[in-house]
Length: 277
Length: 339
Image 1 (cartoon, rainbow over the protein chains, first blue to last red):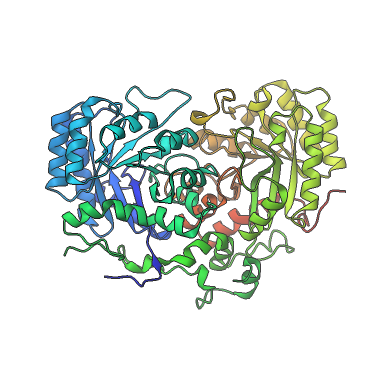
Image 2 (image 1 turned 120 degrees about the vertical axis):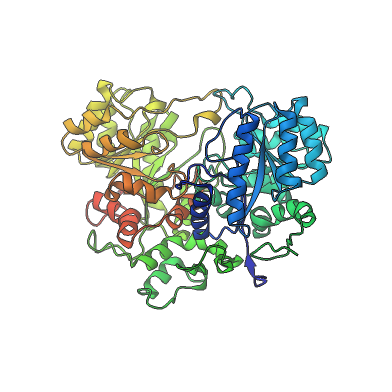
């Protein structure tokens, strides 16, 4: 179904099933979509399960990804899945990548805080993701209060991205301390920054657009822990051109996902639903 | 496109959708999930945030006449804005003329303004005088100054006197963690008591930024509000507004504060999906105020929270303006009170 040409979509690259009311993955995604509807957000990229673990076992990974699969299968026209992996369990992670992305409906990879992302343990995972044309969302934060043991900084991600120029990376939360994080990945053309997770501090979007170009900035909310509203305001309230806002809110993510969506038989034309061709 | 204020006067109850195109959302109630109608026109989207206050007012039939008949329908009172420079970065709209324009364009009818100079400057008298002057000279009554008092500085009572008598302010703003005192210090009780005696609203900033991203030379722990429960019970007539508070205090501790007396919170640091509708199940909506923390935060982030949450017209009216107006003496906001 095509939308009228003058209509704009919003795609959110970073959402969760936690922090949302509901007893099942399907119920939670339904609630999440209900809130997203209020703000005109069309697509939600979902990762991780109902309950999180910093360092998940292979069994826990599978459970978390099953939660996401259940949810996105209920709302295939509204949600994409990103497969949650743990580089400490390399083979199990590659197996999950194959199960959920190569042979399943998921379209990206989520890495959190189990292992710092400059570790060589990530290399086989990144190579397989690149083969599948699945972008890799890496949580990053640079905390003056101290990072978790396996928590990556944006500098760690820059190191990984330089090792894998053929892969596409998303620098989650713009590194948290975004004034440093944006600089850290500035020279890595295969790294996008994503705006979610922090307070809606004015200036983040303007700096990202100024330093990276609007083509490398993605809207994400980190809902349900964050509200869609607090994070969407970072884009709608930013002093950047409307063309830049359109890229951040939908254009860039659509472009980033187009290869894998196309390979799975989805259409990414300007529409409000993803259709099997 | 007409200014939002004008739209508010034009449009009546929503028997028929006569709202300006910029304020219409096509995902009307009843749309099913996945219905493409929730996709909005791109031009409309970018206008949405700026017209939100009016939209909220129109949708809800917002009327604050019961609180103060001088206020327009669609009024929005932002109780948490600041002027002047943040110490570690320049922020757009941090001067009063630009801030007033921003707030007006977003439909704000009254803003309670602190000065960021008050956080770290020792000459707070000068900071307060500049704040009062800036609010008087900009915004035609939109900006209400809230001066800073530091009870650790010598002769702070004179500062308080000037805020109340010389600048004719209606409230003060405190930064206990930047001024180096705790709320169970005797200085806190003295200040709160003196403010209550003068009928001043007291705003207490529990934090000014996320601890994780502070400048290494400016790491400041958040304020512990627990002692306020006792203080509020003891000090007759105290009216407190906790700002930047709702990431730090929720659940039963927040409930205790609210029950202790006339204590209010604002939504700028409230987060999580549907956060406002959830908050008003925890505490009475009568104690919740609209606050954006602009220009340090994007104004739109707070405004969009009102859209994300499902709130009744009565709740919206209270939160957007009614509660704040009730806190203020009658007639405030229709013109500068600063000599």
